[in-house]
Image 1: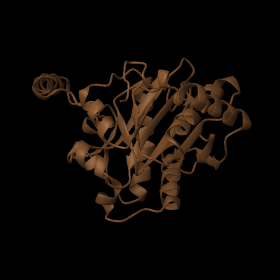
Image 2 (image 1 turned 120 degrees about the vertical axis):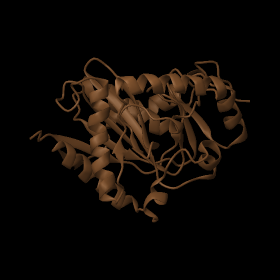
Image 3 (image 1 turned 30 degrees about the horizontal axis):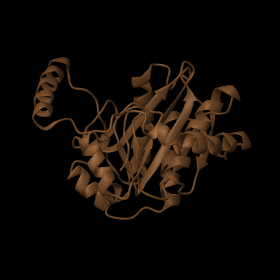
Image 4 (image 1 turned 30 degrees about the vertical axis):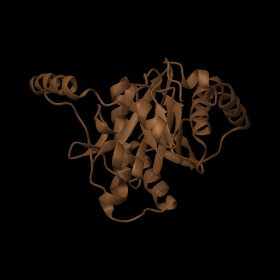
Length: 275
């Protein structure tokens, strides 16, 4: 039995800059102040498009941002752009030496996917963890995918493609995730769309899923939080204890909002300038 106590933080909807700043503040102070491993659940007070740490803004992204009231915000994690509007976002900060995650980045993705899968099952969602094809099939699939991308270009949006150990149903993504690793700890966060939005309908054109369409009902915040709590406690045999940010984490998050996430130098680090 793993039998470890984790901190469980539930935040109200916050502005995009603060959401990203809190995740980074927890990750920074996790090692420095020997904080407990943390699962955080949060939502967004306004629509945002989080860009991967080193993602370049192509013509497709630029057009979307210039024609929609969506705030661009750059993450410290990698991957493609992810739209946040009516969704539940999770973040996990823990040690890379924890047996749950000590098998490298893919083991970490898989372990977190197990918790998400059990949590979703509490809500009546039967999903699966996306796994790679066999070597031969994978090579054929990669060749075909390269040919398709050559014809239409690779989408800059996370929700339109599946990566290792993400949550999917019938090869459509339900929960997309991104990760940043340091030698001794990691941050992974990801998003579960709760309902469809006009942005997503136009953007993904039926290539992504949302919770409402799957179970045909709205889920209350308390039910969602309870399901995710039970999912991770069951999958990992841990104990999640409701907690809050420390004063040091709040101080650092406020600093990061001002100096980084609301600073255009950070958002524009790959050459993107909003008109």
